[in-house]
Image 1: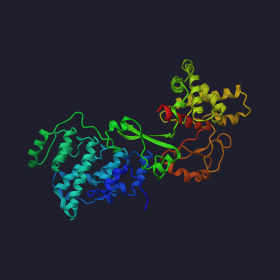
Image 2: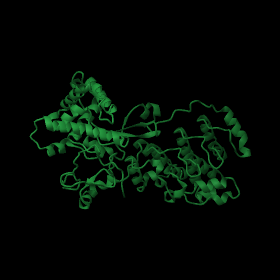
Image 3: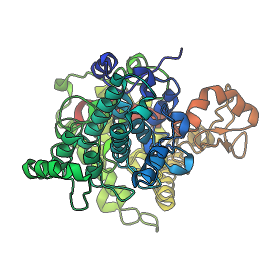
Image 4: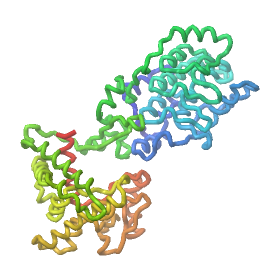
Length: 508
C-alpha cells in the first residue's frame, strides 16, 4: 500500500478520522490515486481548478433523474451528476457531490478556486445544496436500502461541506439552472444554512421555494442580521485563526508533515528541511489562496555580528542595481551614469555579506565575474518569462562587454576561452557555454559542440539522445513541472546561496 501525505494539519486529520459521521474510506484525501494530483499541485505543475475530473472520481454514480420526471429539478439532477470531461467539473465539484468533507478541506487548502463553474454554471456550493435537496425528497432511492443512519450521516456531511464553503467566502449568489443557492437551501429545509447564507450576503431577490416553506423562510429572513462586510474568513490553513491574522499577515512556515515542496514523495521534515532548506508560504491576493511558496536557507546568525551599516549599504546598493536595470536603453544604456553613484555601496555590501557568513568572495566568485559585477551593478540571473527579449539582450550585452574589458585590461594568466567559460552569460541568463547535463558528460556548447539541444521542458540541455537517456531517471520527475533549475555559473550559484542566507536572516 502506497504512503499518502494529505495536506491537512495532523489535529484536523485525526479528528476527521475519528468522526463517526464521516466515511474516511470513501474520501479522496485517503486514496492513493489522489496522491499524484496532490504532488502536482504542491509542485505548481497544475492549478487545482484546472484539473477536470471524470466519473472515476465519483463514489455515488446512480442516476437519480428519473425520480424528478417533469419536475424543474430534473435538469439540475442530471447536470450535477454528470462528470464527463466536457462538463468541466473539478475535484471540488466531485467532493461536494460525494459528501466528501476531508477532501473539501484539503482542496481548499491546496488553493482550488471555490467559485469555479462547470459548463452549466454550477459551483461546488451549488452542487452540494442541490444534493441536499435530493436527500430531502428521495432518501430511500439515494440510500439504496441502507439504514436511516446512513442517510442522516450523508446529510450531516453535506451540511458541513456547505458551511465550510460559505465560511470560506464562496459566492453565495452564483446560481445555475434558474435557481440561486438560498432557494436550494430552503427547498432542502436546511434552515440553519438559510440563515448562514443570509449572514454572508445572499440575495433573496429571485428567491423561490415550496409553498409550505415560504412562511418559515420569511420569518427567518426578518430576524437574521446581514452584517457588512460579511463575517471574516477563517484561514484555509485550518489554524483556527482568521485569514487576516494568519497567512494574509505574513509568510508562514510550510508544514513539516505536508508533501515536500521539491516534489519528492517525502514529507518536508524528512526531505528538504533536513538539508537546511525551509519552505515558506503566504497569501496570494490575486489568486485568493495560499499559493505563494518560497525557499530560504535555514540560518542562525547572531544579529550582533552584523557589521555596522551593512543593512543600509545593502539596501542602498540594491536600489542602485534596480536603477541601472530600469535605466537601460536600446541605444546601449548610455543614460545610466547618474544611477551608478551608489554602485560602490553595493559592492562593499556584497563583500561584507560573504564575510559575515564565513565565505571569502575571492574564492567563491571568479575574478572576471566580480569585475563585471562591479561594472554592471547587477547580478545576472536566469531569464524570467516577464522579461522582454530586449531586456535580456541588454543585460547580456552589458555584462559580457564588462567581461571583455576585464580580459583586455586585467593581468589574468588564463586564456580568453577559460575566462569566458567562467564569467560570460548566455541569452538564458546562465553560462554562455553550457555543459551537457548527461551523466558523466562534460561537453561544452560553443567548444566541443556547436549547440546543445533542449529537453522538452527547455530547462535542461544535452549533446545527444544518449546523454538525455542517461539523465532521464533523475530529470523525469521535474520535466513536466518545468521546475528543474537552469544551469548557473559557479559564481552565480555561490552568490545566490550567500545572499539568500543574508536576506533570510536580516532583511526579510
